[in-house]
Image 1 (cartoon, rainbow, N blue to C red):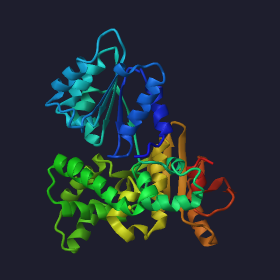
Image 2 (image 1 turned 60 degrees about the vertical axis):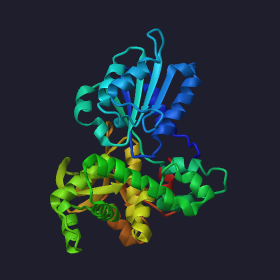
Image 3 (image 1 turned 90 degrees about the horizontal axis):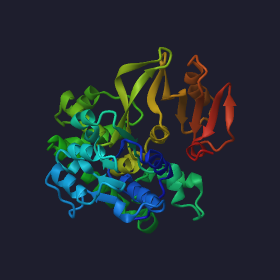
Image 4 (image 1 turned 135 degrees about the horizontal axis):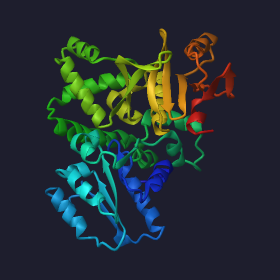
Length: 402
């Protein structure tokens, strides 16, 4: 598999190196967590850390089979002495029973710097969150951004706009790259493998779910509705009307499982004028367009505007924002992005060449009643424009930080 530099994540890990915190990398399976470990280990070796100071254990590898946390702890303890500094990497640590006890025991040793990964939000819930409260930092990892995707094709005479259309369809799972370069017709087989592993290991087995058909139908509904407000009742009623028996409670449980496995993300609604969160009718976004395309087939390409919205949502998460769906009176702002510096507003549209469409997209931003930055992102290949404080930018340029 082609190794793609994940510069921003690597730099974040380097910033936290030797800090008195457990470094926890979370994200969907195959998004690049293990590769990030490899990149960081290379960095350590290039900065005077010797091989025997690094303990790297992939807990999905049959070579490392530990019955419980004590076996794992004893194994690591046998590799260290008290006079040297060690860097311990535990990949997919949730596979070890009561792993949090081993992690905590390693953490309290002053000569050990601990790094762990997991593919389920369960990793930071319940007992672990209680045990390690205030003692860990979470690095939330996503599939390749478009900027990272582009680096894999640089120097090959690709045009950015053309590459972006491919990205909209194929998504950013790192393993896609070598397949797209050598045998693109095999991409669905690769994505099928990822999807099946997530479904069986991270959702069905962990949540005692047996109805795979219902699971797929609920997920298809959500994937097909990215960018649209939906409720559990709406999903339940729609599926029931098609002869697929379910209930609001069941749908709610499945959505929780999808969120925990990082297959989808939830955007809450935000009242822009009242500066408060609203209940009900959340929007959900897919973690990756490739997985969405795999599950929906040709139907996935039917709403390019919402695909763009999904890509922008994930990019805002990558840039460290809390992301909400905005409401201004009866109008909607696609995204309200919040960080320590304040708010930013984003409207996303396929094209605004038609004057009526342009005015429709500008209107919610004009009505916010404040002076926070406002952006209109489109696929139109035009020069950057300003509409009374609202900046219009080509979405590809924005994704590439141009």
